[in-house]
Length: 241
Image 1 (cartoon, helix red, strand yellow):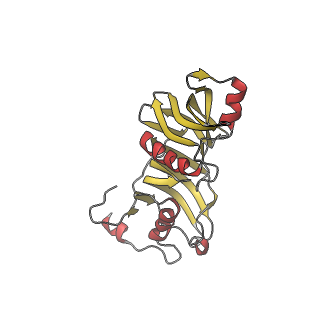
Image 2 (cartoon, one colour):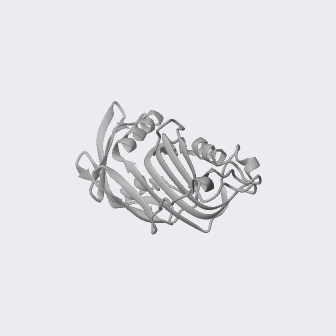
Image 3 (cartoon, one colour):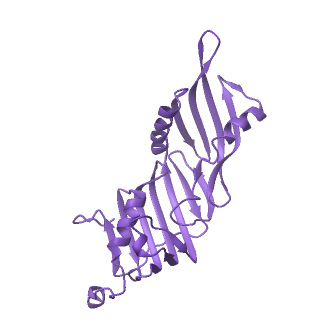
C-alpha cells in the first residue's frame, strides 16, 4: 500500500494541488480537504471527488462548513482553470452545508452600509423558524420616523437550488402589515440564498435550522473515501482537517 501511494501521477495528469488551488481561489476557505481517486487528467476529468471546506465564502456570506461528493466530473480544460474552474458535466453530486447565525448577522452589517435607511439588523434562529428584526428610517414631511420591523417565517427549498422564506409575516412597531404589502416587500429579497451559480450544480432536498445554524442538504449525504490522493489547505505541518 505504501508503495502504491508513493507512485507518481501519470505524465498526462494534472497535479492535485493545481485543482486544489483553484477551489481556494474560487471559495476562499479557511481550511480545505480534497480527495480524488486519481489526479485530474490533462483533459480535466476526475472520476470521484470529495471536498470539505471550512469558512468558505459564497456571494459574500461565510459558510461555516461545506461538503461535496461528485462522480464523473468533467471540468473545463485545465489551461482555463486560472480564469475560472467549472464542471461541464457531472453524473452525480451530493452536498451539505452549515451556516451559522453569527455569520449571517455579520453579512447583514454589510447590507446596512449599502442602504442607510436600514440599521440594527438582527437575525435570530429558533428551531425551525427564523425571526429577523431591523430599524427602518421612514422619511416624513417634517421629520424622520424610525420603525421597528420584525419578519418571521420558515425556510424552504425552491427550484432545487434556492432557499426561500415561506409562511412569513411582517410587523411594524408591533402591528402586522397586510398580506399584500408584506408579499411585495419580502419578494424583493427572495431568494434568501441562491446556489444557481455555485461551482457545482446542486439539487437541494432539504433546509432546516436549530437555534444556532441552518443546514442545507441534498438527498444523499457526501462521504469521504479512502485514497492515496489527498490535498489539504493550508499546507501546514500537522493539518489533519
